[in-house]
Image 1 (cartoon, one colour):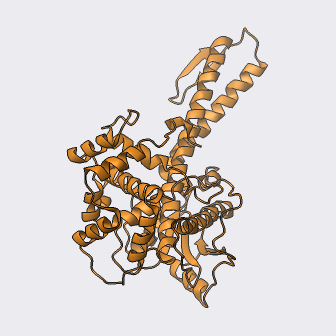
Image 2 (tube, helix red, strand yellow):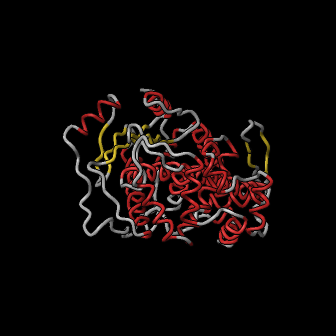
Image 3 (cartoon, one colour):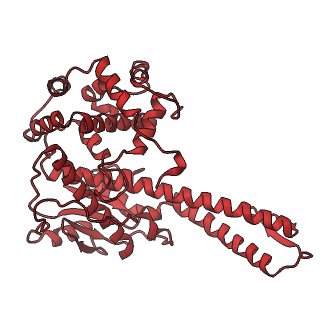
Amino acid sequence: MASCIRTALIALVFAAPVVADPPATGPVDRGLPETPGQAESLLQAVGPGYSLRRTPHFLVAYNSTRPTMESLVSRLESTWAAVFWLCASVGIEPVPPQARLEVVFHDCPADYRAWAAKVGFQGEGTYGFYSEATNRSAFYNVGNEPELLALEEVIADLRARLDDLMAFLRRSGDSKAYELRGADGRQVYLDRPGAERELKRMDRELRNLDRRRNAYADRVNRTVVQHETAHQVLYNVGLHVRGAANPRWLVEGLACLFETPPGPLGTGIGVVNEYRLRDLREAVGDGDGGTRLTGTDLRSAIAAGRVPGPRELILDPAYLAAAGGRATTAYAMAWGLTHYLHRVRRDDLAAYLRVLSARRAGQAVSGREELELFERHFGAIDDAFVARMGDYLFKLRLRAAGDRR
């Protein structure tokens, strides 16, 4: 097993807000059973050094610290509850799986990448995944991500220098000078007013670094942990069919609904995904996400090729397999289309989902057939459809970038 540096950061990385009275997953939810030999099989698959954590709906093999793993579990169970809330909101009866869902949580990125390679997934550059073939999801402690470890070292150094400066100001008189050693090793001498100004500057810098660190961890938790767990639950309660032709835009769009902060309704399925809305606005606004946009702007952006339209996403799943900014934009559009249908065309969405859930494993479905099925339920994807969707999405409230909680 690869060795990892542990820092104080790991305690916050998977921290989830307390979920107050999450929605019931049925009249009585007694959790899922554990099949004979299931635990032994999972431990044998991951190898030595891992422990088991059983929750009502998940079986987690982990080699991280217990507090970090427990915070992960909070997000797993919140997402489970939110998927059942989604089913109830569209009038679909979920079919609970026959056994607890299996999750592997690695403390080290190297262990995660080795596991990904073992199950046939390209893990480099990712933080987690759900494998339809193995029916397991896997994650790693992002607190041990090199970028965050480096950032934590900068924060620790800055905090130590800040404490030293505060101590100097408490004990010094006006005649004393403070010897300031910068991060680059340079030395300067400050009088008391200069030291007080430096104290304020360093405090602002520390707050900015803390926000940056927390925002990084929050985005990983939501767009990876909650997203991939949503995939796993959706594939195991009957909304998607393992081994069948599930429309890629819908698979990703539905998972994006669960990327919002945990709250009274599980992982926030009832609120707007501001990450994806911001990405969509910036793509449609050609880099200016703050401008006032309408459905006409969405049509123009699609025509200009800045964003794939609903038709393109349905006909060509490769849009969602792209890299970098193209993938970001495609996922934002998949979220936007799914969010719009869930809020505005809920009954039609329910009927559409029922048809998809009846597909058989191995059944081939062409892009043209997918488009015909979509338009049978929601009407033609013409300029009017796109304009209505855009008008709805761009009226949604989007907080300022620094106002996320």
